[in-house]
Structures are given as C-alpha cells and as structure tokens.
Length: 103
DNA sequence: GTCCTGACGAGTA
DNA sequence: GTACTCGCCAGGA
Image (cartoon, rainbow, N blue to C red; front, top):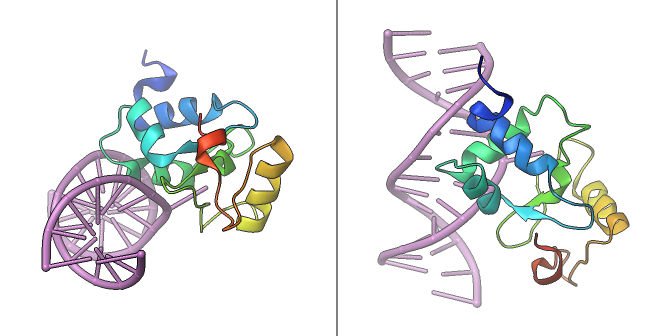
C-alpha cells in the first residue's frame, strides 16, 4: 500500500529527520524539498509531529535564521542551546548563522 | 460538510 | 528600513 512518504506531512518528516547534526534548515527549504506548496504546511506538520524524538524540530528555523517561537520542547533558549551543542553557529542577534549552518 | 486556526514567506506601501 | 497584508495547504472542532 502507500509508502511512508506519500503524504506531504510524511515528506516533511523525512526531510527534517535527514537534517545532519550541526546543520539547520529553513521552513522554505523543507517546503521545497518536501514538495509542499507553502511553508505553512511544514510548520503545521512539525506542530503535529508524531515522532518529536526522531524529528529534530529545533533544526528547522525561519528563512531569516530566527528560531521557532512556539518551540514545543521548552522554548527558544532550549532550542538555541541544543543547536549550539550540535555545533550550530549563532549570530550576536540570537539568530542562526545560516551562512555556516544552513544545510 | 463547513468554518477557523495555524511553528511562514514574500511583496508592497 | 519597517510594518502590514495576502496567499497557500492541512487538520481539527
């Protein structure tokens, strides 16, 4: 029957799960790779993520490098801490340095 | 079956 | 340079 990545949501999960450690991806990038029309679906997919332990939502950031405001794991500070711990570089404004961390 | 909301992005004023 | 609005899709009530 249908494969795992047959739905847009599953595709988003596949992409996010494939983000390497120390790297981040923007909602737009995920939406394009997942073949979704709007990045909004990506955010919604992560919001209803069924495998938060396998889906590093903290590696998905805004196209401007900002972190997710509604981080479901604890908050932006936790998200930032995790990303820093993985080797992701941050700028002085508290946003991810996409120039070095963008997948 | 229908309406509203929602973790965004880009364009325009 | 900043702020606001519009468009898009999917899920839940």
